[in-house]
Length: 420
Image (cartoon, rainbow, N blue to C red):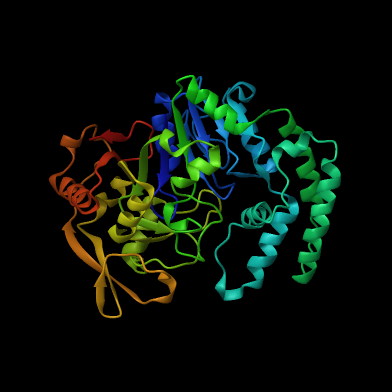
């Protein structure tokens, strides 16, 4: 069977720690979409490690880790990550596998990403400039190069052909930066990539399933950034929802058992796009400061706001969420009063559905006020140790969503997770 862990907001929900926590119960951890625009933060041997492409189960002993075909892979980033992970004594030859259908991010993809974002002016999407969107565009345009192509004798010819195509597009943007250093680094990383375990991903994962192995599928970004169901056009370029597991790994829908959704106890967003509960005041600043809300990949300050149950219920619905993990609950320890968004007011009418284009309507968030617990919760080991007001907060969310919060993360440490 396959269980899924994915984000229910706009990413940055703390999925890396959660995958790391659950990985001990699984045989294989597999990334099914996204690219190095993801940043999953783990604490290993009391050291902070940010993984961008390698599955978050890599530090669990005897776990197999698969980068699935739904991912877009930057060989340069991968090589750097592998060097860091190997420094902890992890044998990547033994436990890291890469699907041959995984598309490669080329230096010119990164250049195109930068050129396109610069051309948008004040209408920027908020791209991480990692080349994600151009790579997915080549994938859907049937032009891309894949990991399996590295083993073909005509790879260099195919690369030059695609590079020339990209150069014409860059000329249209009047982009003339020298990327020769990027290319040198890229080809060096390709030689490293060839030495890793390149496999037929769909057969690999299904053979594991047939052998009775337990698979944990790890998502990147969040449901509200899904290319189809997110706040378009301020979204990522892949299917971040549970449906993406099937196409991103090559597993059938009936193989999926639990969908474990991760949400913060409040809400954040990086980059542009609508954010109904955003707090552009001292409260938002306090959330950012206490929660250390700065991007793991880019270092950008995250926009902060109260938890949005309209968006969260939508995410639970389209993912078929069976269990919820609430992270960063301890960040709310300092607040005497909390707000929960229970509905939207759009054009004077109240609703609890996500509109077609959230960026084209004026949304007023409708809030319900709760008393804060105003006490430290980081040392709590069980649900009964938590303050009554915190339990009330959690139980209201459970009732609204119709899906139960099964785990609460009350600190950054690996052991700071409370099972309910």
